[in-house]
Length: 271
Image (cartoon, rainbow, N blue to C red; front, side, top):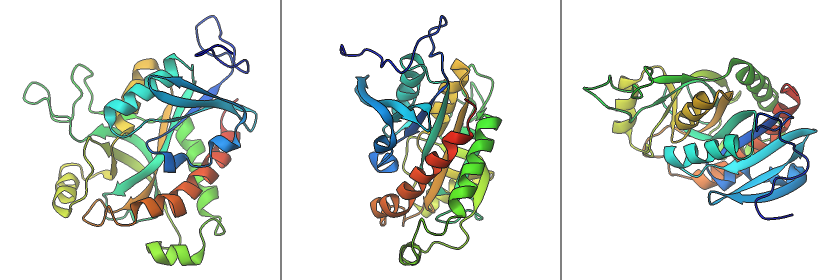
């Protein structure tokens, strides 16, 4: 197959999109997608825009796996490539985040219903947080896709065999792990201090979690009319302990649950 050619398992329609529904699965870091590519059938790896895209089938559904890399610009680049180059019909972002709201604990799962860039500030020309020329500060998740995510999350959280008791004790995971729905804040900064976290909570009291990508992907999907949803496993409380055992948490908790989540999600999606 020539470099850059698309695999035979997908076919372009007259509109330039794939004729079958395909799902783009995005994560920022490799640890958050560890093991997913190995679950694909008929998989091909394609390089585009300096990234690797794993294109294949899972549960008989077309899937494209990609790492967005860290930050809003990198995430937007990858989301645009998934839509324009690979013709995905919807995008789901999975990964970890810091908990902001007092009710959100380490180990909980947050499904984003809307997304805001907490570092967007073009005032006084535009109100703080408003994306210039969009007349909005928040982009909404797709309700159908989010509903499917919620079903998949519930299945994962109700399976006690995924995370053993010793690992739960090590990371202080409460039982039961809970699912939340609400606002996710994104910005090009790793929030890791109690002062900064408190400032964010005061400015955006509805925000459940903070991370660095989802709001940018939501904006790209809004531009293209592509359904988007995001789910985040809470790895820390966005304070001075945010870096402690971060890699270990992703490998031993978040990564395991992410694989189970995608496996539960794909059969629920419309064909």
